Amino acid sequence: MKNRINLAYINLDWLVILCVFMFPVTFLTVRHGVHVSLFALALLAMYHFLSGKSPRMQLNYPLDAVILLTFSGLFISILLSQVFRGVIHFAAFDGPSRLLTAGVVFLFIRHLNIPYIKVLSIAIPVGLICVFLSVQLNPGAYWGGRYATYFVDPNTLGSQTFILGLLSFLMIEWSRKKSMGIIVLQVLGGLLGLYISVGSGSRGGWLTAPFILLVILFLRLGDIAHASQSQKQKMWLQTIAVCVSICIVFSMGFYLSERLSTRIISGYFEILNWISGANLDGSAGIRLSMWKISLQLAMQHLWFGAGEVGIGNLLVGSYLDIPANKIAIHDMTVAGPHSDILSKLVSTGLFGLVAYLSLLLVPFSIFWKYRNALDLNVKQASRIGLFYITGIFIAGLSNEQLSLKYLCTFYGLMVAALLAQVLFKSSALEPTRQASVV
Image (cartoon, rainbow, N blue to C red; front, top):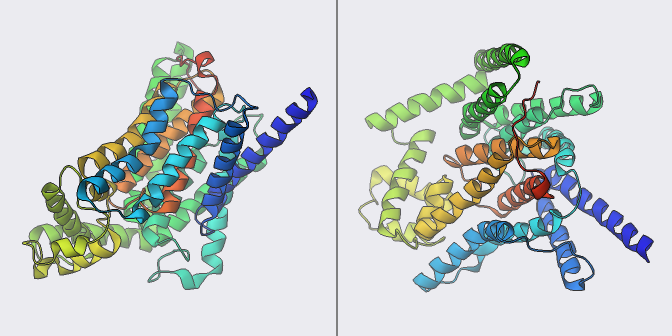
């Protein structure tokens, strides 16, 4: 009987590993593919909870309760908003319900002794390679010459592939024990992720680079400060060399890639023209107008928001409905305000904004706490979590990253897997200072 139970756990582990591996692979290439992993893991969690044969769903109070509440925050804020306004719109719960489900998945997988960070370090570059092949084999999916897939728009594709491309590079472990084949895979995935992002022309995605690099530099300076005297000089030289190399690479990309330089320069002049009033209808200008309108609309419905639909009807005939805002209002009605913060503020008010920020800040604070753990898997998962959330937040300032179902599902699974890695037997993994030498 004991052997059967152990075998069941081994089979369970492999099922979880398969689900964790597949969600980055299907994320941007197969419509609804990322949901398969989420619901498969949720069904496994439900089975083991209801069967009563496994202790895997034990709740470690209060941390697990806080994390589950964090994952359910957007769901609760939408429910409060709709109840207050007396309007029920079930479609608005699609994305938040995926995040809530991911919270349940976290409670399940955190008790499994699986190296999730190792699985993700292979799955993410494989997923980026699949995206590249999808884009190249389906040129009809391009939007006005910009890379896209049949269900992912250029802005979202560019932001996500840029962040994941950087993560692919940051997951590389330069050590003698590391397989050269895996390193090649991660480098290739990282390069293709950046290539797709440039082809998509997503300026909001590119904006994440300096902020992620600042987090890297801050962590590196902390490592140097706590290194032995003999290591400090070497680590300083390595850090300077890496910073200079990054600057050179980005400068070369700007001067050698016409698409990259054109998008950056055009964005600069579009912003200037909007500020001066010379042209309000440039790509960046329209987005700035949408933000201005969204902020003014949010102030009128501050506590519970104006809802997820009917934004155009609210604006018709208002003081904001002027010819200069015509295009911005149309685009905002169709695709939202193109900002996670403003989207949550307009639709669900301050409660939605708090729920959104908590969804980022709570896991960020946990990753920060364990950023220097002795266990290398925990340390790497914590730092990758810091980089990932930083990227999602910055990209979300100019393009919604937590709105559509597949985006919420991916974020939920990504954070759940990284938290599960960090918090597995966390009592034995209290963070301690340890310098690392790259």
